[in-house]
Every structure is written in C-alpha cells, then in structure tokens.
Image (cartoon, rainbow, N blue to C red; front, side):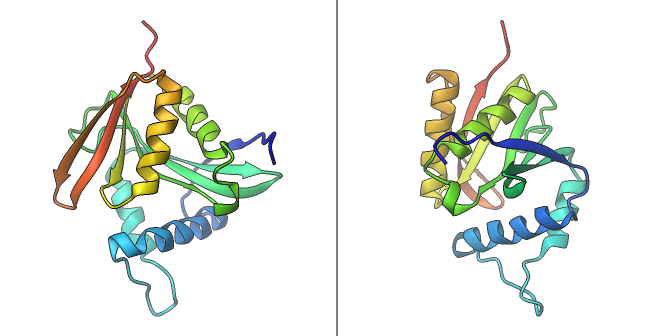
Length: 169
C-alpha cells in the first residue's frame, strides 16, 4: 500500500450505494462529537444531510482504490461562512481507517484542491483534534505553509477554519 494510486470518481447522485454506506461510517465516526443518533433502522439521518446539500451547490466524489470505494469528499462550491461564490469549502472528507496514515488522504485532498483553482476554506469542529492535525499537515504541504487559520463560531458551535488560495498569479 506504499505506492497507492488513488482515483477520484464524481458522484452525481448522493443516494448511490457506496456513497451512502461510507456516509454512514462518517456519521458514526463523528457521532461522539455531533451527538448524532441512529433511527429505528440503525441508520443515521441521511435525508436531512441530503436536504442541506440541496440548499447549496456542491460536488461529491468517491475515492477508489483497487476498484473499491475507500472514502469520499463533498466540496461546497461556495463559502459556508460568508457564501462567497469564489471560495470552495470541504464539507466532508472521509478515508477508511486502514488507508489513513499512509498519505492516501493527503494525496486525494491535493487532487481535489487541484480540480478547483481559487480560494479555499477547510473547517473542523473544535473537538475534532485528529481532523485538524490532518488538515494542517495536508494544507501546509500543499501550499508550502501559505495558510491562515482562525477559530470561528456559528449556530452549530466553534470550529477551526483554514484559508488558502491555489490561484495562479
């Protein structure tokens, strides 16, 4: 797994099976922080997530390795902080645990950044310590440490936000 060649596949319908299943794992992983609850079928509330995406423009991507889905990313096509249409935002990013700590996620994040040239915001809940560590390393490596980080707050609580641009001058 040292020479991973990850692939990114665009997802046109977020109801697609592999995306749905990985989304459930993502919700499970964050449930200690978000306090998300499962329904009577043992599933996290996917419909409310899908409805929130329909209010904003977004692109969803599956991460594939050896023809198997091993993660996903949702990119909001505008800022979720100030709705700036020129700023992209990583809404969700998930890599299966056995593919972490091998630069797999970093390679995929860099590929996603390369697909959308311009300003970026990447947010993490304050309690998501490992996520923040991952994003600081990933963005610093991508931008050669040209990054701004702040703590911000909205109706959902406090979060870290990293800002950078990959626009060519």
